[in-house]
Image (tube, rainbow over all chains, first blue to last red; front, side, top):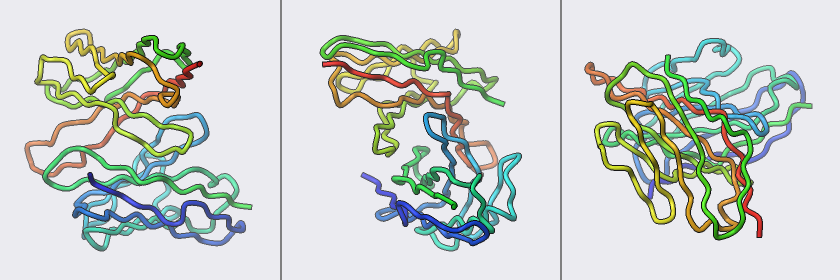
Length: 115
Length: 120
């Protein structure tokens, strides 16, 4: 089956610093990747969609200058949280799909804690 | 915009019994995809079952089956012979079809989730 990895699985950073989260498709070419945010016991909220080689499309209300998304290759997308603040603390999940199927394959998620 | 509603925040069931989780959605599309995902305490999203709207036959995966009522826009999940490992949060999700222009985002819209606890 298709496998998606995320790194790191857990990160703690100080307020005002930036942190980068990587999402990799290990055994397929991900033409499209998605980034979600999830608070405890709540649903997944789509933050943005990225197609390889194109600028990401952000959902309404998501600050594109705070959450920088890069999808430079068919196997890697990164989410950079810039000038992080405690309210950015959350669980971030990526998913990926290729052009042959509509199914999304999810990474294991990254827990971000901003102190 | 599509919406997905799960009206049961929490459910519980005894091991080996059957439980049904409800999901309704709203869309003006005729072709689309529906999914049930499971998120155990590890928080890894796991696909449980999927249904293409053009298929009349309800999808089945081992102990998991759906009751897809297109006209009523209802998509419930039935778990038979519940096991302790079924304890998780379950999400119903809707996906738009690939558009005619060939540019597909295939965005998923999730319901609020149902926390299912299986008791021994």
